[in-house]
Amino acid sequence: MRHSTTRRNVLRGTAATAALAVTAAATTGAAHAVPQGAGPNIGILLYDGYSLLDPTGPAEVLSRLPDATVTMIAEKRGAVRTDTGDVAVVAERSIAEVDRLDVLVVPGAGDRGTVGAMNNEALLRWIRQIHRHTQWTTSVCTGSIVLAAAGLLDGRQATTYWASAEYLRSTFDVTYLPQRYVRSGKIITAAGVSAGLDMALYLASLIADDDTAKAIQLAVEYDPQPPFDSGNAADASPQLKERALQLLAASQV
Amino acid sequence: MRHSTTRRNVLRGTAATAALAVTAAATTGAAHAVPQGAGPNIGILLYDGYSLLDPTGPAEVLSRLPDATVTMIAEKRGAVRTDTGDVAVVAERSIAEVDRLDVLVVPGAGDRGTVGAMNNEALLRWIRQIHRHTQWTTSVCTGSIVLAAAGLLDGRQATTYWASAEYLRSTFDVTYLPQRYVRSGKIITAAGVSAGLDMALYLASLIADDDTAKAIQLAVEYDPQPPFDSGNAADASPQLKERALQLLAASQV
Image (tube, rainbow over all chains, first blue to last red; front, side, top):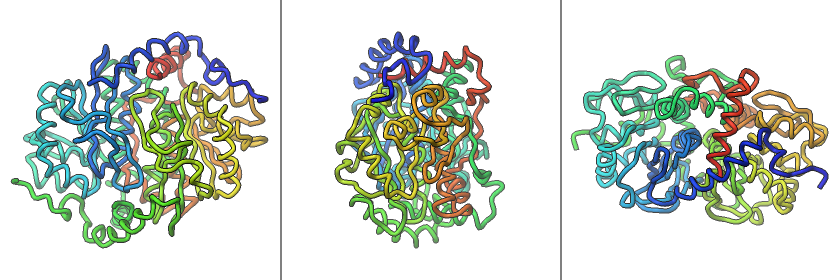
């Protein structure tokens, strides 16, 4: 081949990376046991119909924390499908196999998935049990509605997906704040889908420090430059909101 | 339960969503055949050691395009692990099962995964074959180096992960542009990891139209508000860059 493909070449500063790769291998080798390691044990709950970016955005960011282990967890081990039915992420552990986490992340879902999780008493029981000992219990999008259904948000401030704010506010004893993420004690809720990235960087700064979170932001080159400026529901027309909800519904099974 | 969990309540505008859910089910039901449908057939290539957000960010965005099917594809069907070894996404189809795509997305990876893909002639051959008939061939992060290894970027302008820019420029006949995403004919390359979200929204506007892309941005509430402003390598100190690369290396197996 005309191009060199030695590891030193693909990324600069590979001397350091090569040295650290050994530690990395040792660390991540332990990640398939029930979470245990030098760093934070981060568990992300998957359930049928979640939105793909909700768990994967925070996983990408939090997996870069020193010695962190990230474990996808579901009611049963195995592939768990997203709201579109097209894509599946593997749950490495069942909820029965995990009784302690430093960090719990509960993603959101479409109507079907959110309602399903809200009515899944085994899931809600596990969330309550894990929450007792977490350092941080977090959610993305309608994951805050699942936390609320578990009773974790009673009397708290929280955020959620823009289109679910009225439901959260009117159904639970929760004060909705239209913010990207909201911290209430050790619970951090994020707004819709992509807000999990911002929440995860904030969480990284709390778990480690600002410099580490800033380095992670650079590591995932998170310098957002969307071609449009239409992501804030507060600035959206009723027509755009309706179109957004229609596209979501049409993409979901 | 004290809270109602009927589907109409969780999201507003659910009358529309209920009506469209039927269409959605029909559409996504077809997604598990070799991609074919009324909308764009989008294939995302998974290979050992990819970075989780690279395929999942674009998948989240592009799956909201009307009648789109998103299929995760790999050399073999089944779970494909990320660079950290902790997480796996399921490849629904093998490359042998897919010979036509409207849109190809090639994600990036750490050193090991990128070099592995660059040296995988079967994968490169498939990429070249699929590219002949795509409407759009795209990459995220070091996925552009995989496209370059396949010979698709010869004489073109492209972008890649910030730390891989020098390698791309010095190894291939490619003009590196330090942009969030770069279009060269029907090839669109994105910068690192999270840049796939911005690229996917741009791509959505090309496949559909600006209004649809704006509605998708609202649907995933992509109103980025990172707690820090450290995602642009051009503004980063040598120390921050080194720290970012060390965190990456330490998190990878």
